[in-house]
Image (cartoon, rainbow, N blue to C red):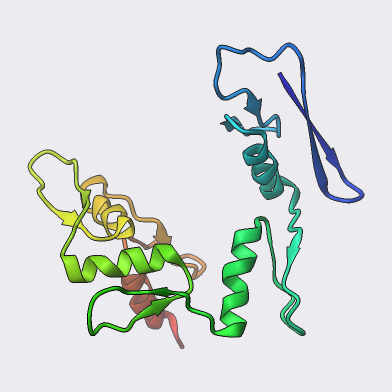
Length: 175
């Protein structure tokens, strides 16, 4: 069992492992925040997770006037590149020349050259595949009927599967 101690004064999270931890369960670091059932194999992942509950954002941008802060150091590193313009990840495709602040963005971009579409719809009878996970997630709404974008106009209950139709709809409310 893991005890999670939230210190309100400093908003720091302290985690103590009880000697009675169940060694058979790999995810022995459990969040005991009310209503949360997340569990982690590694203690540092629980520490990071707890920051979402406490609001702790210990990694602060030093750029004057910026004021942004982050829960994880790598997010600060990527953010800092918006100020410096550093883009260390370069597409290896000859003649492309694109560069990126994040390696994951470079990897995603490389699929535009290769045509790779690793994210496949698992719905029976649907053979669509996508280069980006987000596009698969959006596509799945055509199967599930999910409509997560709700009109914010009081009294209007319209919902949309995609953001763009919501934006168009919102124009109908302009007086």
